[in-house]
Image (cartoon, rainbow over all chains, first blue to last red):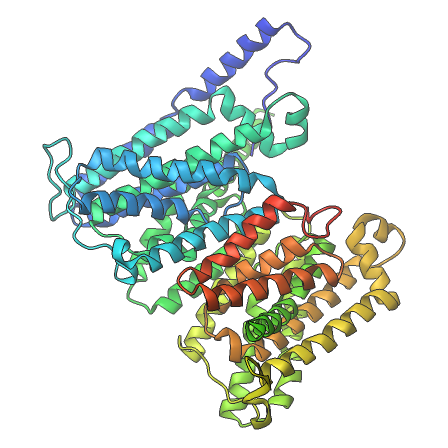
Length: 350
Length: 287
């Protein structure tokens, strides 16, 4: 994690300060070569791995879900044990709409995000009320409450059997969802990319800087005059809405939704994705999602207990061995390489 | 009515025994230990194995259900937890979730996913008829007495012994306690062991009531968190009151409004949070 940028001393006149800040943000916002390569990969995958598109759509959906948690966890610093609440709510919203004949996908996504965003906004005040421990309790409790509600309202959600008979109409009236998952893949990747652009923009705005400041030192930000609670409420609401979007996307691309999307395991899984990739690194969530889903795919032949055991071990190993996640490891690797190169150059020069 | 109240108090007492260890360890080190329920589960499963497979008497099982999780707690504390004292809360959460998952997987691999059933000793079965409309389950009465004795013991240890006063000092202000020469780390290890042991004991006692199965640590996680967050740390009274309130509301909710019974505890949680965000008796809440 970098520290808060020293834009300009606060004693300077406001004009200079703002100019420096704007310049800093612009420099931050420019695209790096590795970012372009990263986003070329999904296009390449479409042509190179045509048999794995269903799996890769799932990666996109879970990557989106992880991205939404990263905003809350990695940037705002709120630990949530119940992020699946929003994922599930979005999923059920889109599913119920499609089941009742409103199968238009884009509006389904919007409605899913809206429902989750409203829940996120409403519950954010409870989440903000307490310490870390109370936050764990509240986030977990809200998710369990939704799960219980979905389980009890069989007439609406189908209970443990899941929601059946979801029919999604063609995207923009043109592209139908095909059996091979081509449309689903392009659709979910496109949504992921658009949301990524949005989050990238948000965290590189002055608002994003304020969030990082809050995460690093809440009291100082308060003293600087930042309305801390309001900033966190906004972050939590956006994160919730985007999780709802991811849930809606999952429902639409798989044409099915069940209680599983609201489970504690889902919340833990997404937490693992974000931290495995590297919290607060923007790409970490997507990379973690990819790693976890591919691992799950490769190990799917083994019994579920086995999988769960190794997920547990992964959590523990992550804490003790790979703090900062895969992206953190990569950054360390790059730093070590360039240091080595620098040392070699110095020794050759001398 | 009285029966429901009685059942609620009994399950509240059990909940207290389950969560008290978490409350104390959290108070000392501010360590977010989400794996507390795994120790309770260990105690429960040991009892099931000893009682059902080896035919050992229930009363001999209980000490083992205390000692084995306590030992496991001390070992894990020394090996892993102690290295995360000053870590980010996120690290503590991740590590303990990892423990939860590994323990769930191990339990379902070894014991299967079904609910475990045990036969409690004959004289603890049945009901005691007090007057018409008020029956007390014998086992619940035993449970209440047992938990009452332990609560009293805990209170005495905490308030009347040197160990207890050190413990309270560490909970109130760890840095100053350290400065006064109290070995807070060792204190924590001991407390962690005892807390895990108590959880294990409660896990064994609760097989009859709580439906022991492999997802136990997750199923009761929110109960633990509520007891600790609402009850505050450093006393016996706070968590006890929180656990009793939770137990009574939970049982009453499931009995009277069974359709929405499971929501009652969440409603209690939200109400508590709005009414007393600092905890029930807390001058300052768990940070």
